Length: 277
Image (cartoon, rainbow, N blue to C red):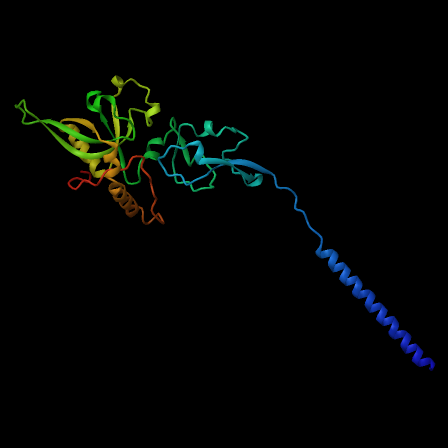
C-alpha cells in the first residue's frame, strides 16, 4: 500500500472520529438541556374575601355566601377586604346587604356591600324600577304589630263618605305590597323598638303606585293588612318582571342587559287599574 493511500485513510479515520465526538456532544447536551427544570420563585399571596356564590342586590350577606381566597399580593386592591385586617368572616358580613351584583369568585369591596348603619342601604334593598315610600302607621294599622320587614301586605284606605256624613268606607287600593322597613328596621332581628313606638312603614312600590298612595294619604287613613306567606309566593313574579322590564327599558342606552333580582317572599302582581292591584 503506497504512502498516499495511507494518508487518505488516516484522514478519513480522523474525520469519522471527530464527527462521532461532535454528534455525541450535541446529543448529550440536548438531553441535559431538555431535562432541566426551572422552578419559578414563590408568589406572595394574601387572603381576600370573595363571594362563594352569585350575590343579588338587596339581599343580606351570610357567612356561607363568602370565603377567603388566596390572591397575588401585588394584585390586591386597597379596597379589597383581607384577612389581615379581620379574619372573622361572621363579624365582617354581620348586618350587611348586597349593594350591587357580585359574581362567584369576585372580591368584595365597600362598593359591593353596605352595612345597615350606612347610607345607601335602602336603595340597595329596592328592586330595580321600584320606589320606597313611607306612610304613617300605628299599632292598630300594623295588624297589631305583627307586620315585619319583608312581609307582604294589602293597603286599605278608610275615608269619609261626604263632608257632613258620619259614614266611612274602606277600599283596598293596592295588593301584595312588600314591606321594606318598619321605622328604621330592615330586618326582624333589628326591630327592637316597642311596637307602640313604631311611627312609619316603608313600602316598595312602582312609580304609579307611589303616586296613588300619596294621593290616598291626603283623602283618608291608610292601614296595612297582612297577607299569608302562601299567597305571597303564589302571586309569583309578575310585578318584579314588569318592574325589571321597565327598568331595562329606561336604561337601555346605558346598560347592556337585565339584572336578576330575587325577592325574599315573592312579589306582588301588577295593578291593572293603577299599576298594582
